[in-house]
Length: 480
Image (cartoon, rainbow, N blue to C red):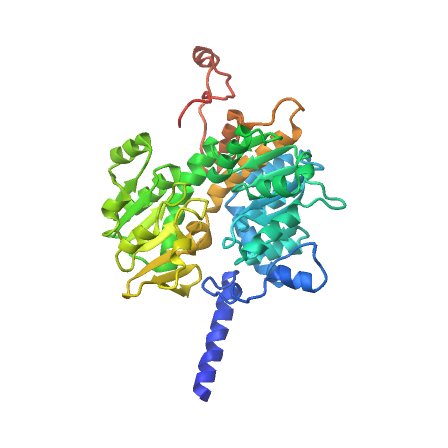
């Protein structure tokens, strides 16, 4: 290589390295770590450590990860307030929690809060692409049993979860915090005897809650479970407000897309779909909605969106977003008919909404253009842009607003405390909603951030409404 070329290459590497250090995180677009070939757990096994104390990509990144966690703490007032209020009481003393969620700076704040409240945890990722390697490194360096890295293979994904679920000397899990139901599924299938020692399961996703209800209906759920996904604070804040901001961030970071005038279709008008539609509309997109539920469809129509079948608009739209929690929503047939350059992404938890498997055929060329961004190229030269291989786009290509995650994290922590400390016969082997009083408490933890002041009922007003002056203020059937 000419000297000028060597100099240019060296300077480029220095600039990239400096950017990584200044930003306090690994280079967003670098895929070298993900494409190393050898998975970290393979290195551990080869080194004679089939059951290591932790397994992450590179623990030397811990300083960067700690800065990420410190930044997140500043924007997570609710979970930090809960930590401060309950750390002396240790309501989770002797709790041994298996965690299987996204591993990022916000999750790290939750993990360290659970530890401050007395729990011992072992944690794996619920998504192979959403882990922040530097945060996983910071947690491992702090002594937590973390098994996760960005770009896990399918085999590594289950190995990591099994490291958390497998009983061992000094480790008998008695609580599960799940996002998608994978830890619950693995423990029930592979460690059935140990599963009977679980005091409670807390689940935060549509997919995982659906699995729990299926287990309950089949008589296979032998422990109580808390459905956090349908709690008001999770549904309204994490699903709606968070997705309203993070969908734009994910699309901008990964595609540099201009939204004004673009045509988009959002499949599903639940809380996630509503958030996506509001964001796209605000930036000038023409937004179509697909729905199976007539109530949600009517809401979309009244909000000013045209409700269509996907086949009616698939040829003309520039952006396709799935948010249904279902499977086979966008098929190979749909993608065959898409226009050149159409962006396809998923905002639901499961990676089954877009039929990515149908795209892995010899006639189509996959071209990785950025981390989590693939061009799928047809023989005639047409290409579509697929984000995160159909997995959760806002976590794979971006990150979530820490404040909203604080709401969810506080809800999860309270659900764990409730199930762990409940008297033996309070909860049966079934799926429960978070008590309304806890929902209201989580909201109250976050109000001081906005200098918000609640109006208090007088005794006469409380009597007139038939309410306790300190809540709960709404019946369980109330729709916010």
